Picture 1 (cartoon, rainbow, N blue to C red):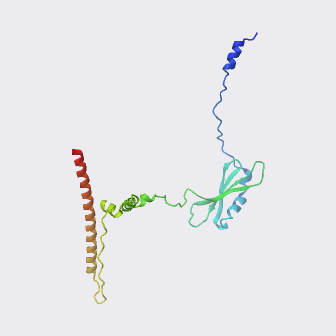
Picture 2: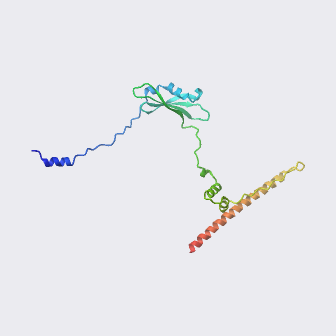
Picture 3: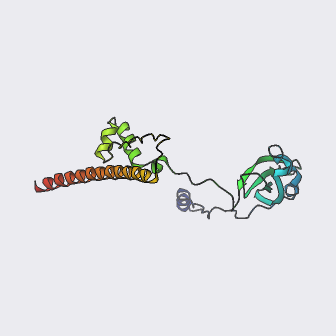
Length: 212
């Protein structure tokens, strides 16, 4: 006679099956022979937007996936040194019909590329950042610049008009340049004095706060 108690216990606690790690396919896709031989199809697809003279020699094929192959061609386009054309072809299983999936240009290892983009805030001068920050905060930009030590620009004196009867000599030109240099030095000294005054006031305020 079967043991009813044992059968009931085995039914109440069934054995849970265990599974191993998921299988990961690491095999690289093979280059499809039909698509690899379709060099003329890839070149014809590129000729829809590029001239024949711009499409150079065939550089090779790369298998992107099963029955998906990309052809590469040298690009003879002005301004695109080191770039190449590409045309990606595909076909359905057990089909000989070739489909053009994508075409375009890609840079190579020695391609001429645009410089790395730099944010505007990193390119702007400190004076420009102070001015725009003040405008964004609803403050007077002139006062913000003056508080930061950027005073009003010193206008250069207008050079006198020299008549033809009295042409300017080399000494006169040197004196004018010296006067302009002196004005620039005075403007820089004025800005430096304002900066030092501002730092001194901040230090005094900090010292008074620490004494309290």
